Structure formats: C-alpha cells, structure tokens
Image 1 (cartoon, rainbow, N blue to C red):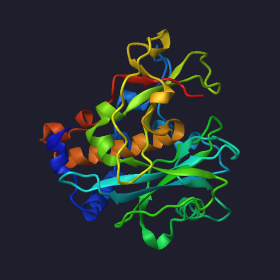
Image 2 (cartoon, rainbow, N blue to C red):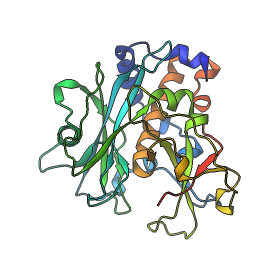
Image 3 (cartoon, rainbow, N blue to C red):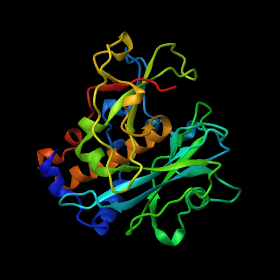
Length: 297
C-alpha cells in the first residue's frame, strides 16, 4: 500500500467534496489516463478510451445519464474511504444483461442529464434527492458505436448511502467500488478482461480495463489472485484469472470506462494538491496488476 498517499487522502466527506470539485473542473486534455485504462488489442492497432472522443461526433438523440454517488465507507485507515454505488442488471433487461452499471437511463423529454440521473437513482435503487448533493458532470461520451451521448453525473453524500433494489425487474443486486482500492491498491485490484466484441472491426481479442465490486460498503473487494491454470496465447504475458476465482462482480465496458475517468480525475487532482510528493503523482497512483481476467460469458 502507498502509505504516503494514504496519509494525504481526505479525512472527511467535506474534504472529499473539495477534491472531487477540483477533479471535475479539470479539462479532459489535462487528465492523462494510463494505457491500461484503454481498450486495446495485442498489437495496439485499437487503443481507445471514449473520454477522448469529441462530443460533436455523437448522435443527437436518445441521450442518457448515469449517477455516480460517492458515500462514506468505514474502510479507511487514517483517512475517510468513499465508495461508489453500482447495480448488477438482471437478465430480463433489454441490454447489457447481467452486467454491472451505474444507476441511470435515457433522458425523458425536457430533462437535463442531472435530472435524469437523479430520477433513475430513485427509481432503480431508492436514492432520494435530499440524501446527496450533485457536484457536476464528467465528459459526455459515446455510449455505443452509434454515438449515443452519455453524461456521468457525480454526487456526494455525507452519510452512508442506503440503496435498495427499488426496481427488482432491473436490479439484481447493489454493489460497491471503494476508492481506497482504486487509489491505493490498483496493482492488486485493477486488471484487464479478454472480450471478443463484434462491434469492433478487428476480429481479435480486445483487452478492456476492469475491476471487481464488493456487495458491502463495509468490506472492500479482496486482492486479485492468479488462477492455477495454464496460460494461453490470449493471456499474452499476464497471469490468467478464471471466472470462478473472481473476487466479486466484474466491472468492464462502458461502466469501467466511466470509473476509470473518475479515478483518473481524482488522481490528477491529488497530484495538483501535492505536486512535489512522488507518491502523489497520478502516474504512481494509477497502477494495474499483471493479471488478465478470462471472459466469463
């Protein structure tokens, strides 16, 4: 663990609010994400993160928004840990069945992204508007190959969140990602997942950034461990982790891209606060393991 960095992390939700606001105000070109936050092929002919795709290239209609709610968790040691609320989608929803997502959905006519994200947060997981404060939005990115715009709305609660399966037809379970894992333990909790995605032109494996959730705000997701299986060519030089050894629910795809941008912004905001501290530099914070998750599908 980066003990120097842990001593610099916010000690209260008020301090987190200040840090997140600073992170949100940074222009996207100032937030340099590491290579492992991109989807890429083995030959790197594909090397993409949607944060860097300009909004002008996106489709005009069917805009969506998601809610990134930060709430305090009792898992910090000498600092205030925070966690993000996610949901595992049911297998009966129209798309992304069984996958992890942030609460969210399409904008209704006349809605702003913030209004839509808050409405979906209430409808899906019972998060009432008075329980948190909206701090702003991140980059509007393309949600799919059609260029459908998606806006991430960031909010903070000063009390532990109390999400529920308010819409059991949509939400299979509520899950959490702790910032302590993302910022202090990336080398043990962040990895890549092999996916064969038909929407990409190259007919080769693609490697997406991924991490794993915890089903409790009180317990962080444990460190990744390699599985006792032989490597294949698709594993490249990494050690494989098979689905039965996953330490929680797999976060990948669009949800992981959003999470990567958020964590990247926080890391760069920490660097700006402590420019002379080596362990507080974004490049030092944003680590990745030498593991690769096998596709569970």
